[in-house]
Image (cartoon, rainbow, N blue to C red; front, side):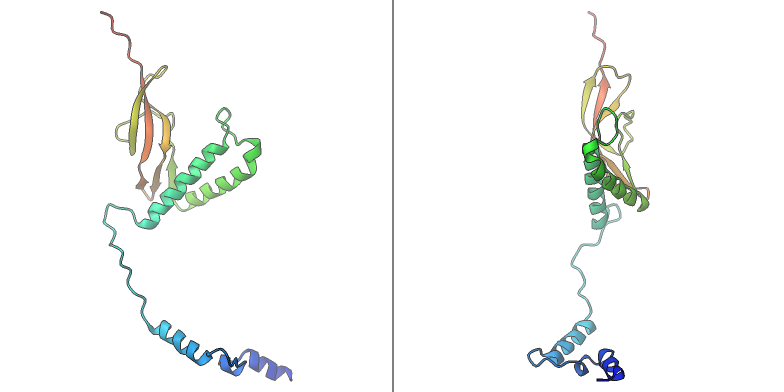
Length: 170
C-alpha cells in the first residue's frame, strides 16, 4: 500500500469507502443521522419565567453558592477565622469555587454580626434577647443572601439578637 492511497483512505469524505462492516447497517445509520439533523428540536414544555422570578439556572447558582458557603464555614476554626490544619487542602478548593462564583458576578452576603435593619433582604427566623448588645444585631446566619447583577437570587435567613431590656422597677 502506498502512502498516498493510505492517506486517501484515511481522509476520504465518504466513510463507506474506508471500511465496510457487513454486520453494521452503515447506510441506514447515516440516513437516520441525516434525518435527526434535519428535524427541528422540540420546544421545551417549560413555563416562561415571570419577570420577578429567577430563571431555573439562577436558582441552581444560588443553591451552589449556599452549599459552598456552608462548606467553607465548616472548614474554618471559629476562634481564629483561619482554616483548620487538617482541612487546609480542601479549603483551597472551596476558595477557588468562591472565586469562580465571584468572577461570574455572584455575591454571597454573610451578614453575621452586622446591625439588623428591617430593609435588609433577609427573612428573620426569630428575635432572641442577647446580653451585651446595644442594638438589634444578626447573631446567626442560616442561609446567606445571594445576589447576582444587582438581583437577589436568594433571600437570606437569619436570627437577630435583641438587647436585653432593663428590668422594670415597680
